[in-house]
Image (cartoon, rainbow, N blue to C red; front, top):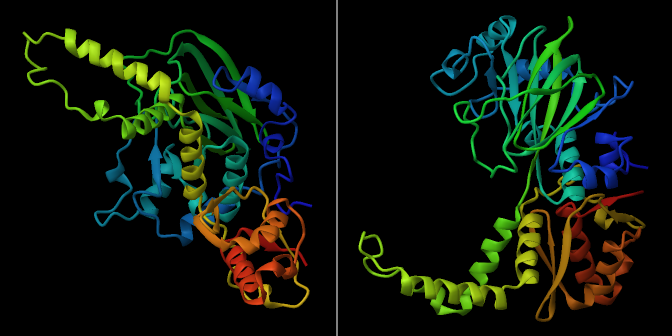
Length: 395
């Protein structure tokens, strides 16, 4: 039984009853999905307006951890950030009273339930997942019509928000390809809907949209951003790998190439040669493995219970199991095993292989799983797995 509100199926928690197969086939990176439900408390375990009120009163937010926005009239950061870089609570409260939206970017970095929620989605989607929190007073709008450079799930936690989607889209903009209202006008309104508490929308990157609080209550929603790697990213890595083995790629561009009278014919021949070597030698597996390892290493390690249950690994009869959604890949390095996991790499002697197989297969185990490694190495292996949060105590 999962101890988290999303249970054992994170996508069902976010977009259910729409199934994952239908979502990936018909909506992902293609078009918006609006999920209507009569479950107003569905997302309350993630966050509430009361919790935000507590955070604002108890935390010393700085300029990186708080923001505000208002479509009209717009506001500047100088109105709520003090000269020392910290947030001015009084100004934030006053601006909120005057219709500004309170934004808490990257709140998952400090709120454990949001961090674990992001970890679960990362396990399902194999991309970095982040949260931005938006609290908007009644009858107000935080942002003018725009598009985002990353896909988002919008979880409506409390209140209601009226959304507009427009027919003008930018097909899969690059990360960092900022929205410019002078270049992209909204176009015709193609869909209007109200997200009520407990409902969700998926909005792919590049789709023009805006939203405004509806009704007499404040609106709280969590924007869950999906920061993906693209085929262009993978191809660049594959080309870099080819270049390591072919010095032709590492030659400088021809002298005088920037001159108006430069003859490109020889450069074109060399370019075609390089393209042919890419087609012949580019290795999908090498590039994929590199991206997998980098993604896994970059996930924050699980440290729950590391202090309060620090002696668990030495208790007789203690049983453990790999944590749900724990990212990992097992590799060999000479006579050692390397477990690539959240936070880095853990090394084990080859005699720990049978124990690691039990762990990674999801079996409930105790220290005897590592008996082949000997008593001392078995204890070290268990300590390491528990300390890095790879496994958790189950009894």
